Image (cartoon, rainbow, N blue to C red; front, side, top):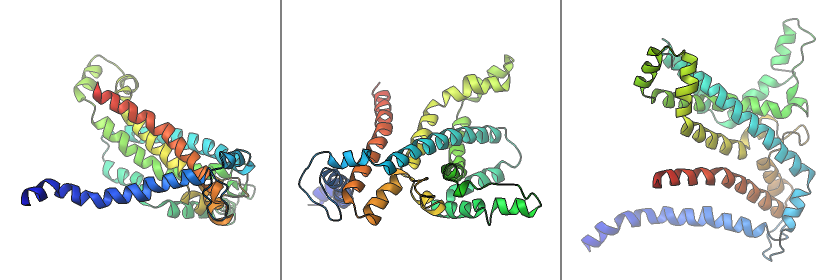
Length: 290
């Protein structure tokens, strides 16, 4: 009995977690996929009807707006956050005297929740209370910064807030990558008279390709599942101008009572995540096997 316990205790300890994940993660994913193939509305139905919910989804102008916003938001968020994070990491890599304090300042936004970030930026960008009101109070009466209430510009306020929140995290990733580069290679390049900017662009940054990929995966995941930041900052408005797939799914499930549409939109979001993550996992596993 003692020998059996020694051999099976790890399995017994992990079994509850494994069962919980199997039921509450993969089980509900399977349930959502099933419901997305039915005519479910306020209450779920279980008779398979094909892709009727997906036809409704792709015919919805609100979904088109939400998915288009995801493309705009995701592209700008990922590209700018990675560029800004890399620039900050290179700055800190110069061994400046106040590196510890600056690194803390850059990383601090990541310690805040998206709700806090969205609320803070909502105050900053509010035309009657924030930046616009402050500058006009200084005497510049013609100054206008009303992106928060402009349907054409509101999506960019989410980009600003998300970059502020996440660029410090990207900086930390890149800084760790910069510090892991062999200093002998850098010294040899400097001895050969290669300029510092050329050392970074030709030697250091190309060697950090795995870190760039990891940062891209993390930021893509944050962009696709963005919900709380949008709710706190714009509430999806003005109108549906800042709707994202996550807010669309929430509205269908809890405001409109349309479970079928919520399930189909959730499955599309999951497929987008898979389209990003699966190639990454495949390349990692293949490299390890090689």
